[in-house]
Length: 394
Length: 199
Image (tube, rainbow over the protein chains, first blue to last red):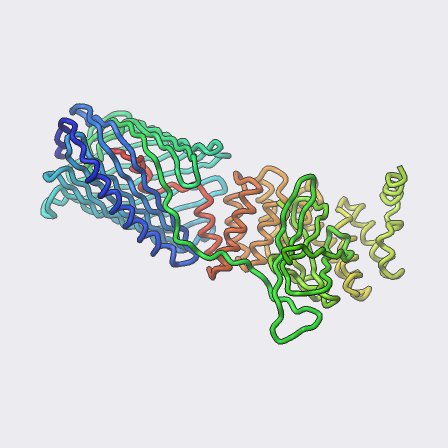
């Protein structure tokens, strides 16, 4: 495996770095915008901007300005994870790394899930070293109440430079996850064959959230290797959010060489600001149910109930409803006695009542009409041939 | 003092509960018998009384009220068997809601086993999800993953997020699955390279 050049004297071109970062931001935002179009999917994009100190094994310490965009997208049967890292060393040399993982997975069946994924990525340093890899993975997962275990088989190609030099990649690993309270513990063991290089890694990742702070540590060892080095490694990182979309992130440690992705072993420390890119605005409508008032009509008005827990066991029920003279509610919290709501200056109706935490049932009556389930509650079939609304007081 | 004495009298003699006066005499007697029997079996009586009062409010027939109260007593018993004798009345009520939504007694038992009590909110959210159209097994699987570590507020937020996605047009099962992935700790293949600025 080729090693990288030693970073040279300080000469950062911050303007160039900023242009690169801006381009990444735009691309990431576009990807996020497209990713959130399927409504049921979940997407998250961040960009880290910071500085790193790095010492590759056998080289001098160097510093770099870094930009690290990430994008995660999770849908019903698929997920995409894209990540990039741009480094501008004090020698003014640039390093670019990127990878994209796409996964297809089945829905759980008796806690088993199958996943197939494809990974592609590349890295380059200055204008003389570039790697790429293309991998396929098949994973069998078994989820448990507190974690799970999965077995992964990997096959693909990795190359330095042209595709004629591509080497075969075959790997297998077993991973176990255990969650306990705010802590997640991941244990893994795997063996990889990359051309003539072979190595076995074991590792442990612990991830915990304590208030707003997220801490993660990785400890591992390359226990058996032919051409990929030996040794123990470890990394740690912590993030502290300080605003709605911003967080401080510190990380550092020592990592082993990665023959698949073409990186050599090294030590590093980095400090960065993480910005969570806002998702394109999506409407968040209320979920009113249709309610036919006492006067009926071809176009029945809708109602929306909002539950606002207050102090000392009191709960405020606020109802938006069409013009009416009398609005009454009844539920388990009123011993199923009708209670009139008061009209507010804002045009809504409300009442404050003592209510215990938990699930409650409610019906609404407008101007003496039938009892119905108000919008904004979950409608259940009642025992008396009608619908009852349920809501939760947290 | 007077109120305390009144409550004591009611507690010792449920038939004196003034709320029963909203039922006709025949229905009242049959409902009181079911409530007394349930109380003797260690089941909470308030949900049964409420079910009868709901019927009275809605001018249901006596037969229908008695049937509704009897059915609820049976469901409370099933929930108690699943959740254990230490389950609180609120947990049993939430358990009944979950059972009626389609959860099995085994799911209730697993919820009790994986979550520190009370499990009221977890069961309430489970019932709510199913009532929103999420398949019972999907909702149960999601809640059983979250239940060991999530706080009640997290579960309520999870339920709101699912509701929001359903309102936006997502299939309920997909909304649940997607929100579960967001709520759970993720471990992905790229995690090792996730350090900001890692060279």
